[in-house]
Length: 367
Image 1 (cartoon, one colour):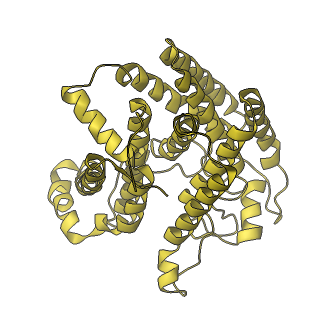
Image 2 (image 1 turned 60 degrees about the horizontal axis):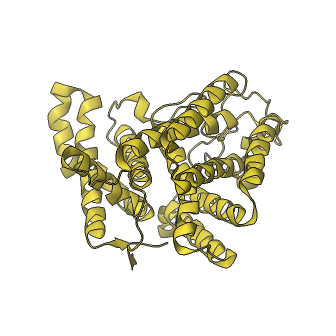
């Protein structure tokens, strides 16, 4: 842990914090659905295959914010050597592997182990984006983004390695999913002959492009031009429109991180960042409700990985009988959808209290 000494971009910390809260929210809602058998709002659950829900936007939002933080962090503390970047990448991947397989480590007969996962993807994307930031200029990185997104489309349409008929509109019927099946076997979450890993091997490539778009956004914010919010809004709108149009022929699919999914979610995240930048990144200190909103977001944002790890370690809390008491009391009058928020919001408040303690002590947990 270390003390915070460098001024931080408020909008970036707040939006990063909100994406972490979103990740905790949607994971907890899935726990309510499959654990407590609650009928939660469908928009808070991931899309079955093609399409986009609120739940599908939070993880890509975090990846983009991580990319945006790279030029800001390296400008503030100096460029990190490649060895330090690789070491941090390794720590994130290892931590993710341990968290993804806690139950398997406790009992080897308790299901299959998982190689990939959320933190593993975060680590790999961070490592690739940080190294490319050091090695390449902005134009080269933009070319890499374009090449990945364009070439990923025909790659996903190649014949599946295991002979499954290729149909990008059918769940798992694509080359990307078949690589996971052949190399990793049936996945714990998406099982069967058309199973795959939602954070699998080839999907990491467009996720890297996702992070590099964040790096480009971060470079805009680093310069702090007078019209930064307008520039971000135009870029976000452009990516959103292009992604929606492309989605008619190459569907928006989170589970393989399709190219239109990258553009649509980057567009949404950039528009949100533009609004927050115009609102929060001012010289005056926020007050009232704005201050409360900033303190809530930054508590999660400056210790985002720590918040997510704490969530991974404590996720079963949402299913505790004590936590479900308000849900059971409210579901008759409010319905499952609204009543499900009661234990989930209590759980988020508990994690926030831990993160706010770190914020008040000016501690940042470094992974």
